[in-house]
Image (tube, rainbow, N blue to C red; front, side, top):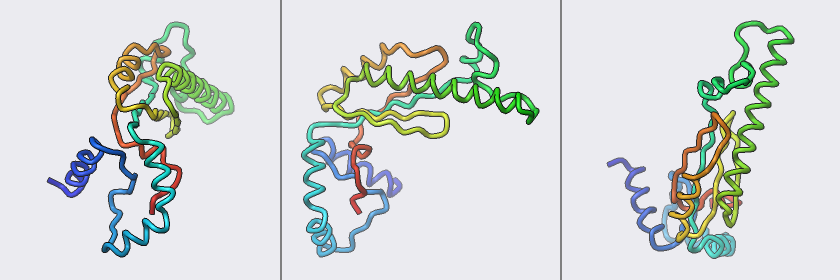
Length: 178
């Protein structure tokens, strides 16, 4: 078993009983003195975060646009999901940018639909390229209900959602612990 898997197993075990601080995998504190110094320096922020997320988990929803499915949409313009073939002329570039804007609007609308359906305590959105990652902070006891709501979610044609979690709420930490 790799070191990363061992660390994950330890964090998962602790997380099953209490909130955890979101340290990066490679964070190493040399000894108790270093841990004490970090706790003295950042203890108030750590406590505030742990109180805020107590009893809560993070659920992730990754939204992607399936170019094959979306381009099959009846009456959809061909440029909505794929860049124009060849040509670097102004028409091709304009068509590509318009298509990209349409794709982004479609995903942004889907993210808002997810937020409304999820009704989380807190909601964060991260855009990575043309994909959107939504993060919901919910009560631990709401996980099954959240998953059911996401299964029943009605998304625009061609938009796919992949739900994962529950995770420790690292996405809701405003500052790096170290």
